[in-house]
Length: 214
Ligand SMILES: [Zn+2]
Ligand SMILES: [Zn+2]
Image (spheres, rainbow, N blue to C red):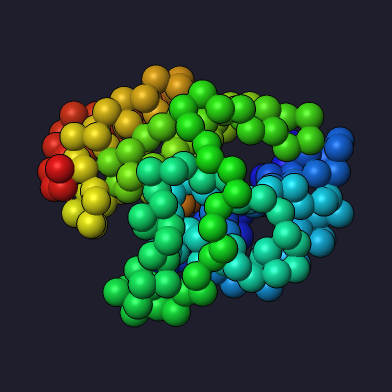
């Protein structure tokens, strides 16, 4: 299993390419922008792209889907609660002053406990709303792709439309419960671990309180 981070677009969003090197299959998590770069990374990997997995449907996380699917038409896996955001991706982009191509609708609904597979590797879905409705964490093999729930030293905003601070607090508890050694791959910024954030992140070590939304 290999993970490549491709940071794209004006919001410097992290798109992750997960490659099962044994089976030569790969998936993209949150293709946010710059589809051409993402497609180049897929081709360079030598693996066949099987799916697109979406942590949440903010425009900076789904803006590359249309361009990827034009070249490699793989199914998009997304939580149904995110549909109002997903279906308004281009509108969201306009609100943030960025140009976003509206992605075609998701193909497969994912929910709590669902198993996602790339090659011979299984991951599973944890529902983590709060930053956005239908937000999920994709967890497996000691890795958690946490979208915009948790960042190195910070947490996701809850003041955006449909954000909810109470829900985010609960979601962060679930991420904490994955264990200190879990590698955390956030939607923005550097990779970290659950253990490091429990010690140094003010929102996880009790020095700051989550406000906003809800
Ligand atoms: Zn977001
Ligand atoms: Zn984001």
